[in-house]
Image (cartoon, rainbow, N blue to C red):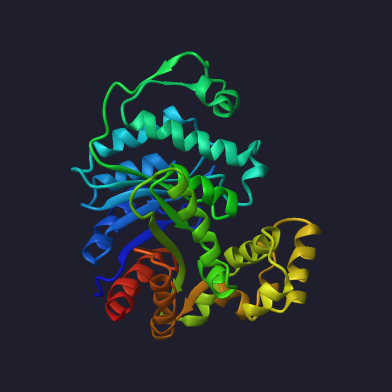
Length: 355
């Protein structure tokens, strides 16, 4: 296996809704045996609790762990800090990566999404201090104090310390979020649109925003960069591609919501009229993912590496070149395929050794 990139896997909990905690623990052992060094867990209301899953994983194998991401509106920074610090008791000093962001495009359906950039900044700043053992008064973080009804002048200080290094990662990939990440955090988690952003020609400008913010803030050392690689691999390549369609539909529409124009979509090989049809279907009710018949092969290839093992090995050459060009240190594979066990086995046995 190539040592050029560290290998991580994101466990997207809604995708693996039928996977139990004992099965996740077995997965962790298999992933470690296959050369994976870090597992990341998503944060989704209605799914298994992120920190409970991470606690189970911490006892399963000697892996680094992380959140990709913790949603800044779902729980207050004191709750996050004491949860993460407690999990590190089980990790024998291995690193924990704490990703932060506003969540996916469904977040506003469940909670009030107030001032996302201020919330991201204040959450990151207060978490760094709490995890360092400092006493924090949320009068210094008025947006967080108001949102979570925290007493502004009360001193909050953990009465125990993390037993592992905790790195903060910015999971927001827009310009304003990346500026906060560069100024306040240790690294960047670039999400499931990684391939699209590179191919549309926007990655350099976005990374530059984070890097310039880090310099302006006097932060030393390069930002650590993790690229989320959407992967769906199965012996049945067509089944692997069909599996992606719900996820792809929402992400393709979200690109337009983030400012992509018709020329951006053409760079991805996607006909703008096909995106229009997805948006119109969503407006008529439900989600874009409820219309898999409108997801084209070009849309799948803009977001995922999806197919049989031979096809995925070939596509990963291109993805590795993208990650190398922009200085990413870790490839974090997400989704894996219609069969979690088979996807992990094919990733570890047939894809990673060829990188």
